[in-house]
Amino acid sequence: MNIGDVSEQSGLPAKTIRYYEQIGLVRPSRSENGYRDFESEDLHKLTFLCRARSLGFSIDECRTLLSLYEDRERSSSEVKKIAAKHLAHVDKKISELQSLSATLRDLVDRCNGDDRPECPIVNDLAHSGTA
Amino acid sequence: MNIGDVSEQSGLPAKTIRYYEQIGLVRPSRSENGYRDFESEDLHKLTFLCRARSLGFSIDECRTLLSLYEDRERSSSEVKKIAAKHLAHVDKKISELQSLSATLRDLVDRCNGDDRPECPIVNDLAHSGTA
DNA sequence: AGTAGCGCTTCCACCGATGGGAAGGTCAAG
DNA sequence: CTTGACCTTCCCATCGGTGGAAGCGCTACT
Image (tube, rainbow over all chains, first blue to last red; front, top):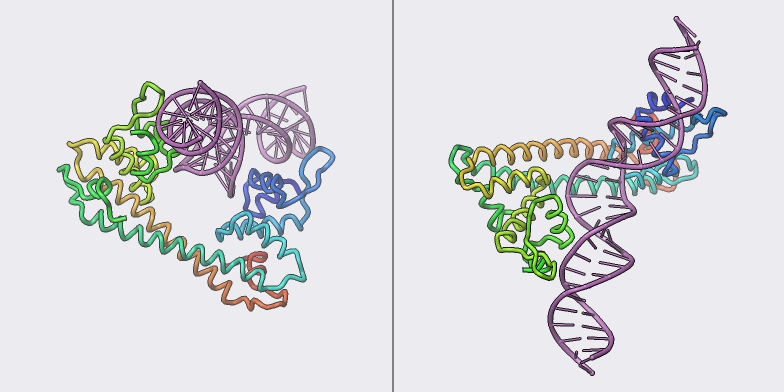
């Protein structure tokens, strides 16, 4: 299979697949003409990567997940550990953004938004804001 | 004032302040010895920038906010527009992450996390996951 | 006066995870 | 034989800085 085929079937852009080869996530062989030649196993790995990335796992986490995916002797606890850590990370980010949202909403609500220059948003940013 | 002073008082690393000069957010004059010489006005601007960045405004948004901050004729509606747009962006990000969190939590909850290889997380990533 | 050590300067490279585009080889169809 | 789609490598750009090296200036201590 050429890169265009695996790109279409995995959902990853060809550029990204070349990058993933460069950082060692896949190792396709080469045809006589120099084209990358992907096995169906590579396609599975790329599809796996596309899903894992869309769930926000970092490349490093993906690398580990992929090696666990390929290891039929793995323990599910290893996988769960990575996923739980990532979940905690996402939840932390959510709560940070929620606090940010509250601050911004307060600023926006307090601003008249009219033609006059008086503006609590700018005032707060300048002198000891709510953050 | 030298860069070390404004760094300490504004809360921004010296490296970042040099970068902000490079991209035109501040324009300190120079002393005879070549050192940057910051006015108290620069300090105010840098403090403003530090707060605005910590609220997640992009550099471009900060640039606009800063020019509105310095414009005593500005209308508060211009400021409010930027802040409201940013708030909407943050809220969108929050809901994306919440949906992500739900998917991950489901995967994690369904995984036994024991010594056996059977793992719904890896399975879902491999074959048509929840995402 | 010398020197140690910090602060300042510039410049260059790097991070994650691609995207854009140039310059050129390859293949199948008309 | 040419067109056009596909492939290759290579380099540059993104965003918002951060790290480090090489080399000055300034202060303080001996």
